[in-house]
Image (cartoon, rainbow, N blue to C red; front, side, top):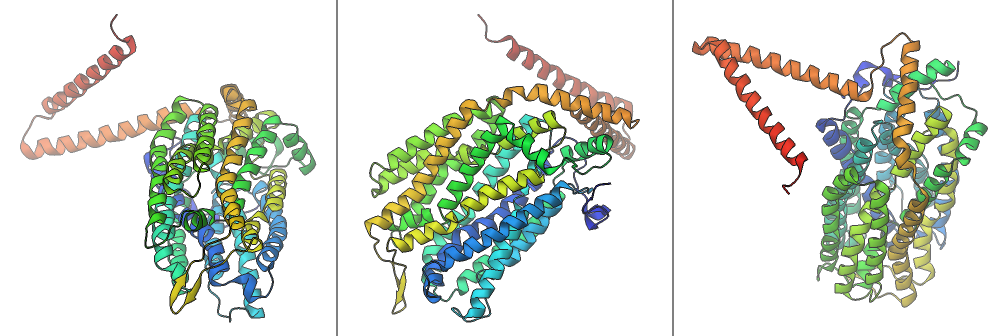
Length: 576
């Protein structure tokens, strides 16, 4: 018997199981498990992403207080190396995890809690700034956050990949989840914290107190909503897949040897294409350094608290995000994700081109920002569908799911590790080109004008990173035609699930049949409750139950007839 992690642990207990009992994804699951829960956890993630480097460079002045230009880069490199080993081990865990709660939900919850505590202590320290003890403290909690917590938290993408076999439903959830996460984070982080609190409070506070309060309060929010997310998500595909694995290999854990896993992945063209996209996503995310947009607005456009340009630019560029959150999920159901991504990539490049015509002109920047935000919304919110479809294809070809496997973890960790120094390259580049950090003079924070080399570096990190990613997405879309093969793939996967159920002596029901049965059961319960309520009402008011019931049924039938007539008229098309 293969080693099986978390089996018999607290995550196998009844009180730690999902509250989702239906085969279909309900409105409640969408709102709690895929919008509010992950949305407010992501707020904290974005707060750390947006403030850590600003704090380290402008408040802590990490390279200066420790007397080395490469202090932050060195710490990031050490964290990356340790993160590689941790990443490998985490994927070993998920590959061998057999648990009622799923293969990924427990680790996402653990990762979020560790992220909340370690993230706060990356800012606050009991030691004197610049002391050896302070440097050790920073190393310890940066390692816990970046090398451990983030690896666990990033299992959330794998978790979403196994929520449903229905590709339209899964694509829709992927888009909505990512879109709403970015919307919530955009409003709370970009507008409120970066747009308002940062220029008004944080930028002027060199003591760090307001930074601790900001990070700490959002950490508490993340802790609360991580529990909401955990209990309102169900790994439906994991449940089916583990039953099939148990029947075919004797263990619900994945037992395919590591070397064979690697061969399987590298022999699949769709995996290679999806990996190119994933590398592009890591590239643009890391290169921007978390605060490239803030620096672009501050130094290129001259935005500050007094003129309000920071807030105006953010609000203008956020409008396409709000529209996209509504429109893109609808389009995802009507058109293929491939077509949406190709068009969005072109729109992104057009927007970047407009902005670079005169990057220092505020009106041009707003117009360009508005256009490229309209395109980059889908590009940065839908690219995960490549990996999800690839995982289905791997299961179809080789009999196991790729997400959470050691081979995929090793490959992902390797390219992420190779690109991780980009996190510090942006800040190191600023220092190299002569960046002048804000200074407090007589109680007033002074923001200095930067030289052209610094400004060019900021523009490249902000606009260039987006443009490169959009080009990658467009090129990959040309060759990635897996979506049209999904019906055939899912038909075969269902046939395997049916055979496995029959071998166990069970009756197999397709997801559609389970959905129909659940709806019929729910309707029967509602009808039973209605009859009970009507009988009580009739007894209380002295009415004839049969007569009142017939009135209700007649009205219901009339509404049904109207709906059917309307549908028939619509189907027949316009009159000639």
